[in-house]
Image (tube, rainbow, N blue to C red; front, top):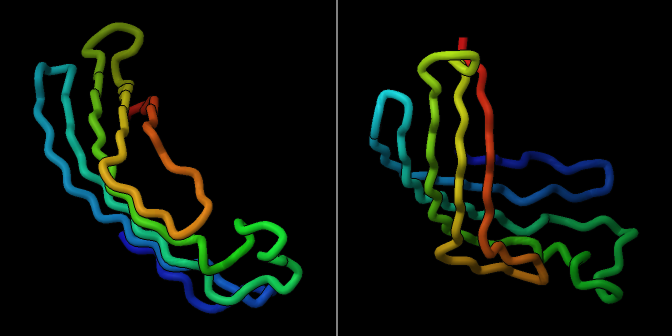
Length: 123
């Protein structure tokens, strides 16, 4: 789903648009466990305009033309739905994320990997 930035803020700039396509497939292993593999794209554009109080010559991270980038992540997820007991009606997940491609426009932090843990209460 794209995030389109319209207009500018009170400092005379706006964040760049962001596009995040995703493609995934999964398999139900048991009645309480499913496994999912997903490709997540992330494209974020440079900032348009600039805050006049920031000086990019003193710190490159303040340059609005060095804020964009592209990344393709491969994510593996395990969804766990306890079928009975005190945890029945709740769901847990574990994501392991590994970037397959990264291209950053400026001095930004690269992602090496990530882990996400989550809990849902289903009703």
